[in-house]
Length: 170
Figure 1 (cartoon, rainbow, N blue to C red):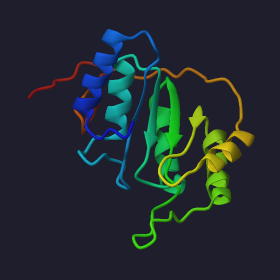
Figure 2 (cartoon, rainbow, N blue to C red):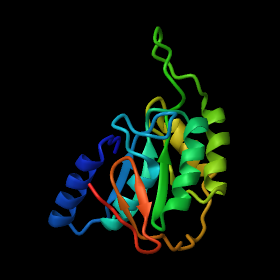
Figure 3 (spheres, one colour):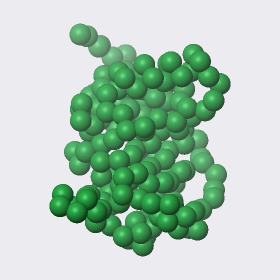
Figure 4 (cartoon, one colour):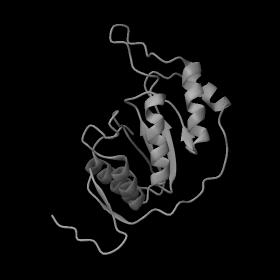
């Protein structure tokens, strides 16, 4: 949860898979530019983590539900595994520390996540048990449709789809 570096994520996933049979869910935190603090793209995260065999991929923290929604929708298109999102309740006021999105505002936006096929939703910074209880009242159930994801070669910042013979050099 709240990872920013793809190399650290890979190390953590491999360590967990070597030592546990439990499902693995991984989330990274993204900025408005759709990259992590270390420059990782959504596509590189999705392709790498699906290739490592994780059970669910998500986005959490840093931004509110309005800002994360387009990224969650894109992530849903990039992977065939379950997708989850846990946005903040907006941003905190530096003077009071209170977050700027109310529970009802949060829930209204989170309904769009569920309609977009995001499999699991929750909340991060600024949300409270009341947010989660209200979110549960609106939770939808459905089936996930498997997608065919292309083969690719990734760095943390770039993915090259392998749809034929490609020259890849370093």
